[in-house]
Image 1 (spheres, rainbow, N blue to C red):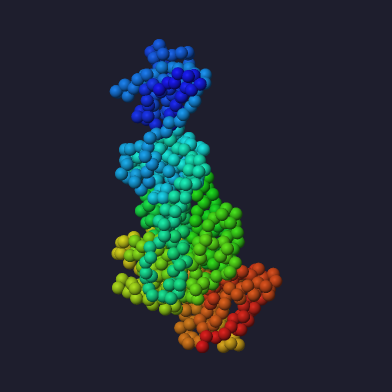
Image 2 (image 1 turned 135 degrees about the vertical axis):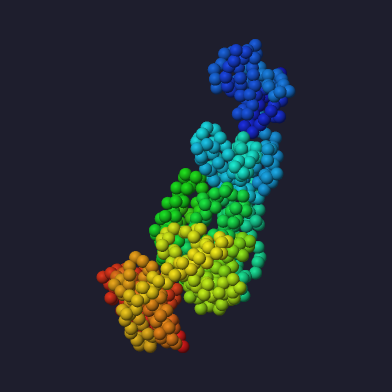
Length: 615
């Protein structure tokens, strides 16, 4: 009701979320002139409510968008509002907010058609050609809220990524997707924001905790890695629940692909279960192969470029980057340093020999060497166990991937046999070898593309087993034909040497004695040559070096080398060599400047000759 004392007059400012139920007869409201008719002027009290001031109740002449004070004379049964203009020089203003019940996002499916209030963090702001889409995260889930001012115009520009807000709006279905139509958005003050943030963090921490499930196989190394694998899974689950984009980088071979695809299946399925958009799995998750077994400058440059553009164009958070089958060595450090400028968080799931300088850049690091294991526990084995912790529901789709990874990476660890036994009713060892070869062959032609759907068919994840078998058979035939052609060209040019430690060394110049720019590439060519030489020299120590103008690829059986350490020593011992590289202890690669090739190779051979022989 209107007060009698002038300096005590109360004027109400109606919030954007208010509707007719919030209007009270006799109260005075701030309004804005919307337009005129012969019988009076229309006044908007907020974006949803307007009334009529009859010309007999107008105090002075106005133009459109003028601010006025109006008293509600009557609210008619049909919803029409009769107003009269009032004038006060001194008055107090009181905000009126919609009397909406604050609900959790998980409760929204049962609130369709009702106006509700939601409190949460802005996880994404996406400007479309129509409304502005805010992705809101609370302690129970995430939800899109659409706010419209004008087509393509940013609504609520004061609300930024990471703000804690209260949104009031109607819950609706749009294109079979739940959505809040925003009537009002308020950035919460410090005290309220801290309370809401604390509630969200506490609930998310509990929600992100992985289930306590057993491992697929009995393994002391994997059991010892369980705490770190749970940590990795929790970080990934929390990223999903907070709509943080995820980039998954992996080495472009069968082991790296198996590890990454296992995690991909878990992440994508959990994004769907968490109520993301129909295309959320594409703009919140990206899998990308890396040609080298480490995170190259080229990789971080690509990832950073896409991430910063998405941050600016689509209001996305800075991503969580997962590296699998790479990320553990000092070769990764230059990329980590670049990423640290932008505070990009990293997780590593790898089985390369780790360097101590790396962990300071990482949120978590699963590596068998940390618990007394070695590279025989492959990235595919590790990634599959992590994937099961992220979302146990994907296990039936991925439980064969560790067996494929084990044979593809030539693991000699006892876990290889255990994972093969786990799936022998569906996949023989030869089946797994064929799948691994098909992955290597297809990825060579895919180059930097992930081939998401093709790879799913090769791994029999798509569900079409007949198509899987046909595709693998064709790819294996194609790969074997090209391998045999390469071996026919290369094997006659292998140069043998016997070293002082009685190791049998074999050298092959793959630059001049192998086909270029085709399958198999130099690394795999060297591996195929090595396998043949091992069969020809059964029971003897064998080292194979396939080299080109500025690189060498090493494979060893029965010689106890440490390739990463050898690379570091050579770099210090040969000034001007431009030496870099690494890998596993007995499988790896080294780069150098072309003019120093002969010097570097001879120094490398000397170190191999000093290595112990496995008796």
